[in-house]
Amino acid sequence: LSSPKETVYSLSAEPEHQAFDPLEAMRTPYRIDILQPLYFVLPDLKRLFDLAHEDIMGMVEKGMTMGLHAPKFAPKPKAA
Picture 1: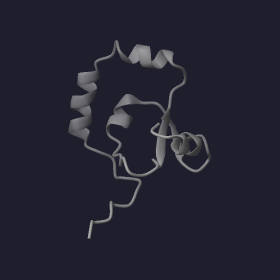
Picture 2 (picture 1 turned 180 degrees about the vertical axis):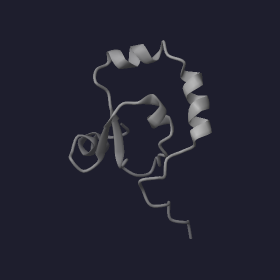
Picture 3 (picture 1 turned 120 degrees about the vertical axis):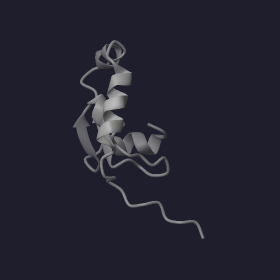
Picture 4 (picture 1 turned 30 degrees about the vertical axis):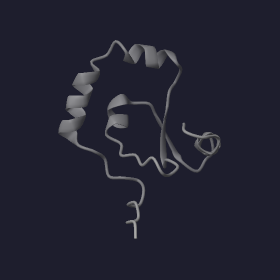
């Protein structure tokens, strides 16, 4: 989370919340200039430690093969 505003927003009912899945997170497009429409929720912090013992590069390769999901946000407006 990048700001106090995003922290409050992320805990609200407005954005979508999904159970954390590293492959799905890798395939999800993000923009750094908006509040995210989707947040992945960890069941507990132990999940992050468990992830360190998984084949992350294998997940990256699989994600690259599968491609990105369609964005859940509008395209960034073109600068004038």
